[in-house]
Length: 170
Image 1 (tube, rainbow, N blue to C red):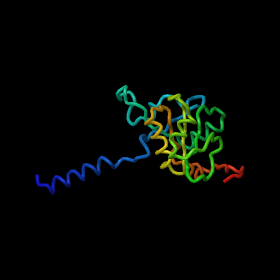
Image 2 (cartoon, one colour):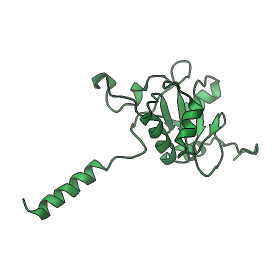
Image 3 (cartoon, one colour):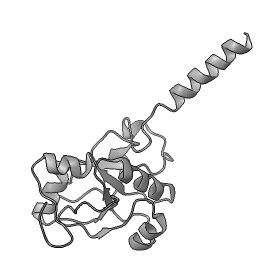
Image 4 (cartoon, rainbow, N blue to C red):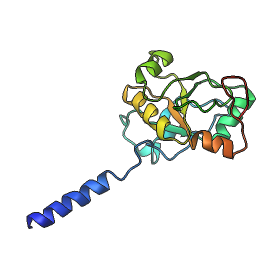
């Protein structure tokens, strides 16, 4: 094989290897349990059939749909931290516990604490920033991290409102 052909093969291989979405490691939404809480185990967020995965698959970033989050927040069974990570600030989903800039992993870790099984949902406007923040937390060993699929944009598109830190509604 000539150098030209091997370079082409390398570039093609590199393109295929890098074609995945950087902010999302799962396509599965995490449905609330019977009582409306988010399941503590991340198995539902792992691509493929969880029964066929190796037991040491490790933590992954999961997702929760706008409809499921709205249901949980509406029925009062929230058992997780809801953190807005969007920068610049453009409002909060009602029930948000804290706003922390997506790049401030140290602040996120400090706020969440040392319990690696603490359930957390992060959100931004579209998934990009929450994907970065969520993956940074997963990389530090947190096992129950979710992002809001579609972010605040999907939340607003579904007809739900955002609260502003001055008490207004957006």
